[in-house]
Length: 337
Figure 1 (cartoon, one colour):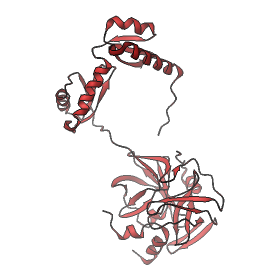
Figure 2 (spheres, helix red, strand yellow):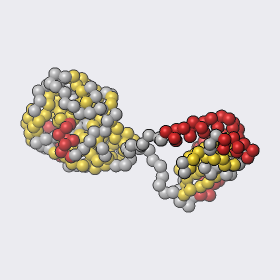
Figure 3 (spheres, helix red, strand yellow):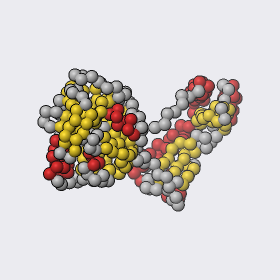
Figure 4 (tube, helix red, strand yellow):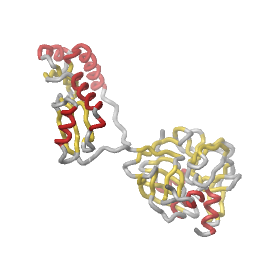
């Protein structure tokens, strides 16, 4: 590492320490009023039918209610629903699934999903291609023989949340998440520029790719996260993000970073140019909140309003790159809590 690079990292909050030490949605429309009325009807029938209730669902705008006793179909029709006579009650299906849940430790890795299927009055199961017999054997061992099996290579996986102030890695270096935006998050530009843009990861898992970065001149970047990550409108240790209205000089501000956590201070002079050894950055805002190596890119927030991302500083002052110019540069929108 060059002397000039070390100087910026030490003063800035990228990761002089981490560099030196190797590191081991879519909105949904509200339900129609009629759908909610049908749901209430289903609740009433569930209680009235008791042990004969086989479940309910909507089909072609109608409420379908399954019953195990054909003699009770008239009650369903009288309530304005369509009756379907089935073999198993909903309680029986729930019991079957509970038995499989109890045997979960013995489930083959090829079995990816199981649960109640009221439409088909059975237990459904999803398995990897070519492993249906393994799934059937697992169900039979749990006492379930009425099982519908679907094969799919599209295995469910966890979607991990990502929020402001958390750590992420660039190769063997570490920076901090600023604010979640549609498709990823914003951070400091020098996190990409001074590391050579190495592979991005978080908690040991691949994170995504650089969507763009600028340093020097400005100090901003954004990371486009992969589908395994869910950017949320929160800042670690602080709370929800509601917008990005710029606070006045003198206003209280919180900083969240992966080295020093949450620190407090106030907003100082704006439109500051800091002449780092690696190059100058203009348009920064000074604060007296503590930041250290590894906090680079982390979030500055006033109340619930995003202010900027950590650029650099010294023992007395921490500078942030205002967030609105980042959003404007890349056409990004904040994810709000």
